[in-house]
Length: 288
Image 1 (cartoon, helix red, strand yellow):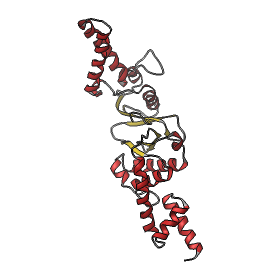
Image 2: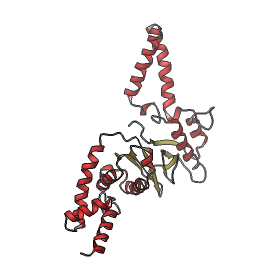
Image 3: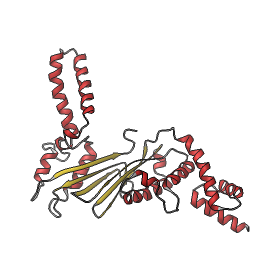
Image 4: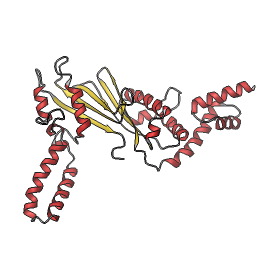
């Protein structure tokens, strides 16, 4: 094999794996110039490197959204530092992953086992990227909104590029009439991004969350010296406020503090009632 062929193989192996020149040459030497076996060799080496990083916390990264013919997918990919979130290799990986996420309708297992443009599985490309960049990277969560039974809208906050940012909200509405009230969807998405509701209404909040909050409120009131029976009355009022503050329909509308979101829905209905069917808000690293 000529020096040119060796260099061509090293170049090809680098393009396939993202690994440095020296490691690629070593892998090819170990595997008699066989690129496929060298990829496997480096992947195994990459897994060993990546595994050491898996105990770290990845709370930075990006959220990406894709829309096509009324359907929307959203995905969060985390890194350890914001520096890596701005890395061109990381961003390219995330962009391709967003396309794959849309195609697989938010199914993470299918996403991880899908092939990327380099003909390598997502989960293996992830390991290679971790080994190359030197940080823990995780595909954290994803969701898909189909176009049946409603209309989908989204809003991107702190966008670094089109459809890529730090916070993205998606909402599905029933009762949208094109050309009449379809501008309200992006406004409600913006409201969700700013106000971070837990659920559409009280029924959507997990009972354990309300019970825990009530327990904390009661303890605070009793510890302040109030009698138990008075603490009971005050806590009921406070938990009611907690529910209102955290349910989308009861929240104060960000564009008019005199109105609630439920009022905005009534004002913008056309021939049928305007209803919020579902929503999601992804903020990078939230809850990690």
